[in-house]
Length: 213
Image 1 (cartoon, rainbow, N blue to C red):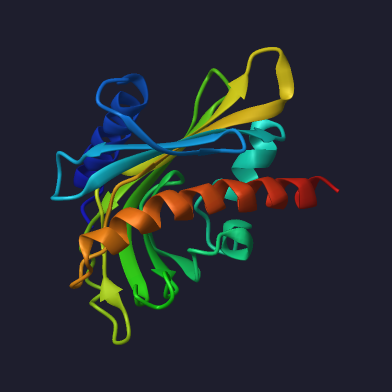
Image 2 (cartoon, rainbow, N blue to C red):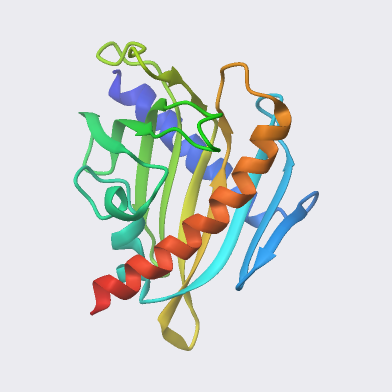
């Protein structure tokens, strides 16, 4: 993959995710529970929705980020029920890579296993926050794989932010922007994401607690 194109694309996606974070317009809350809010608005990228999750996690930003960050062999493969495997296909720089993620079947097997190939940019910011942003790409070493439906992540990512005055807590804001592909009924997709994102936060909180003890 051309490093200059990848760097330019990765930075453009990171800026788009920051715009999602700052833009409060148009979001509709679809699920609120246990301090986690999930909202959505129509995507500008495909005929589906962009979802935003927000919640506070007990743990320093570094501890929370260790559980969330997209690295091969990392903690996320252990606790995130929507990640069956995560591998780095090509490392372009220390912070920019092409990854392949596989997901298990879901929604009582109505959603069959998927795989996603993404350009991923990870950043550590001066204010003590961390972020990752991603978008789908094609890669010569990752053709469609038998047994998986190829899904497509549009500009998406997460931001792990410190809470002023509360060093043992972090705010995690996530953006899921996924075209699952296949012939899935819209009702199945619309029900899956809010429930899945709420479970993501519950499982993350448990993972951080476990890592701290």
